[in-house]
Image 1 (cartoon, rainbow, N blue to C red):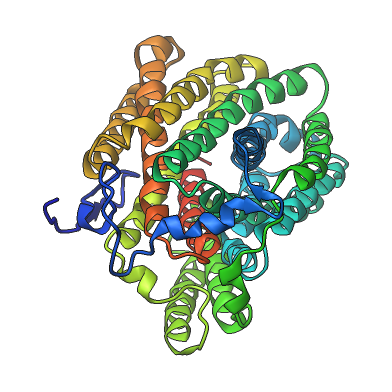
Image 2: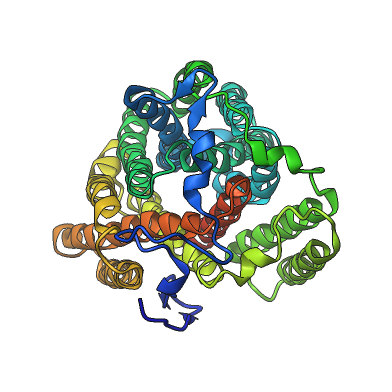
Length: 468
């Protein structure tokens, strides 16, 4: 396969980017040649795809994948349900227009900031208890969120709920990577994982819309608790309990590294969220933004000198990982900014919660179908073409949205924009996950997936800031 150079161009005014991927860094899915160099032979992780009783059966693998895909399902479901309930929640608790965004931003802030710690814990010990604990945190905290009596209470609890979400995603991706060592099997597993997010998109809007319209926004969160708590308990009995042998070599959590990055991400996400209301020149935005950059630089320096870094510096030298980290920003930037149109439809166009939710169905339907297909297409189509194609489709969707300034343009502009854009999101999300995880060393699946999902959540924050 011919060598190509890597380039990334991102325009500050647009969530889209143009990217080139070096295919020489990837094992050819149609070749049986042994991978070499810095890329670990993924087949060696077959030991991790066995339970204490022996190799996993096809039925067991299917059940494991369904449970792990629940992380993506509930991540999107909770976000969509919260978005659709936002206007009534804000009116009931007395939020100001400027503070209402923090119901969403507090969740994405801690989601992004605590991802690396969660990924590190998954690699150090085992992703299963991290996964189950994360769901218990989400489910149990949904109850007091539903009972919130003022804005501060709801925002603080949503922030803690985001920590639970941060525990789910890297542990889920790590278990998919080790439970499906075969290249083709793993690509399809990632596709199904992404498709569950699209299902969560549809059901989050519809169920959240029905509940908000017929009862109260509080029941949106009670229903989350009703769904998530039993799910977490069932998942404990389905997920494999094998030990990650590589994880035994880990010395510790790398507190200096993960602490510096966590602080940096908290400051960065806070600055972006504040900018939408205070303005980019506000001291309350500039100061945390500058400090966040300093802390991220400190993190990179620490990782170069500690004996057992949470994120080894060699990860950034992978020709695919670094550009795709920034590519990931655009995926959730587009997704969240498009989903927040529901708030505008309810506020400006006076749609009910249910009416707005139904109008967003093309988002989930197009994304789910595309995510499933991408797992198969990725085995046959060059990665560069796949990822750049996703960006082009997101750009087309954004242009169509920008031209839709009236409800009468729903069918002519908004629906095509949803379809084009979310197909691009699905291609970008699944394609990005496949490419990044193909180059991961055994025992580092949790950390690498955590960093990639941090990129997604940074994009989500940008999407929220651009719309609220």
